[in-house]
Amino acid sequence: KKTAMSFDFAALLSPDNAVRKSAESQFEQCRQAQPQLVATQLVAALSQPGGSPTSELCAVLARRYLPPLFALAEIHFSLEAREHVKAGLLACLGSASHPPSLRRKLCSLVGRLGAEFHAAGSWPQLSAFIAAACADGAAPEVHESALSVLSHMAPALVEPAAWAACGQSVQATLVDGLGAARAPAVRQAALASLAALLRTSAAAEQEAERELRSPADDKARKAAKASRKAQKAIGQSLGEGLPAM
Image 1 (cartoon, rainbow, N blue to C red):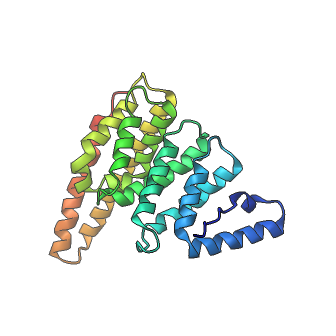
Image 2 (cartoon, rainbow, N blue to C red):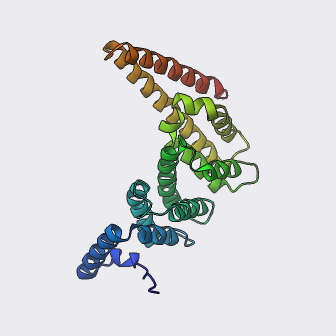
Image 3 (cartoon, rainbow, N blue to C red):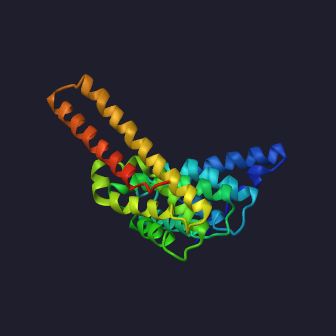
């Protein structure tokens, strides 16, 4: 049985133009022909401790190329590979050894995927990760990352049905992160996530207002009215939940 070769991501950073261009061509060919292999090797590269330029590059590549893979048919990206990638990303976030710049890229990627999977509930491990990362005793770096993921998930979280199901727990998690006993970086991440939720909810309310001005039909008018009411309630809830500063 032929063993798949590992891709040399470091070659993409080579100062030698010929080497770099060859690596770029090989990566593009591999990405098109063997997306599953590229996905698993990107996650493996991200799992390495510390933060090298190659790891940073792999985080950029992962953020760009991993999300579209989940739209592929299973014959190209199997269920097993999908779960492997998701588990690997959470393991990376759960490590406190990665530098802040790498963690920020991972949070953006995990938050984007989390938003896409939220409605279908197809990534329950992410919810479990966030709960554990925000519990007392968790490493501040991991706690901060979990709160940042919620910030990137804001568009999905402020959907009325989603907020009805998990809004109370999300808000409690963020308010807890603002507690005086929390590390400064954790408090900053909690505040940034609350701001993102408020901002996203306000934008959705404004969009509903615009739709109400010229609805396509009565059904659209009712939908816009319901959306405006729901987003107003979400915004009020978030505002009232904020502790006194």
